[in-house]
Length: 344
Image (tube, rainbow, N blue to C red; front, side):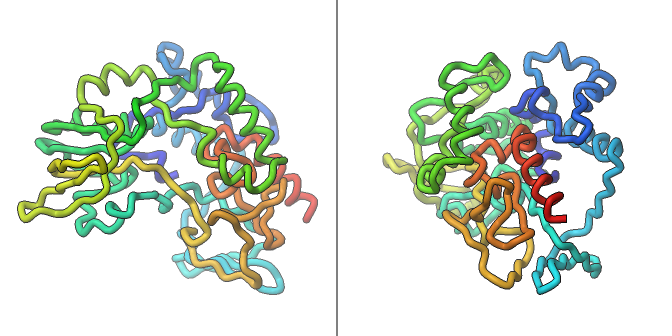
């Protein structure tokens, strides 16, 4: 859960409500609500009925202790398959053998960047927002690219650290302020219905078209005053190229014409998992069937490789974009665990 512990943004709020944030558990008990009552006594006073991400990390450790879940925090360097099953080779030299494997590695390492940003020669000047830990914004002119919650928080964080100026550029005509914690609108209910049902039963072409569009970008309204006070919003603006000047600045060129110079650029441009971006080397007896760079899965989350399951963002093509976030676990885990139990 490295991305849940952002040193550069310690007060980042989760976008799922408490009711939708409790991990799946066999007891079916309200462990999260009980933990919140004891650990975060002021939660009821917050405008957002949720937790900060750093608090959720503490809760997950409590959750693991409650169910006596032991975590081996060694990095997996390679996953190999042979006639007897799978072998995970760890960075500490150990090897773990298993008949089934669940890939639940989240989105760390799958950051998506515009091509010009990925090719920029100085990663300390142009970076993905998830890699901004330790970024010193004091006295700098900062450009944030994106129109979602992360972009807004990055602007507010940079301004709070003393940035000389903050611009927020995005392709949309305007930012959308919509709370995930208010009573859902009819449009949001329609989207949630499609996410919970259509992805499992619809054809591959429909799922591919909609996997990244059914959860539109939006910003919690509570951030609106702070964002308006600290950042110059630039709607309908797309950066098409950038170069490093002789003075060490970043000169960006816009699609509509014109250039601007900044000391640093933060790209809050999301994540895009793909088979070629798994955080370990993968060696299977047969190639993994995939479409649009995501593994093809059945209704239990099992891939074309028997015994190999995917969850979270890696399962979005089958289960929809809700599988990317905390409240997707309830839908997915029951199916996945049931299938593994039947396999024995």
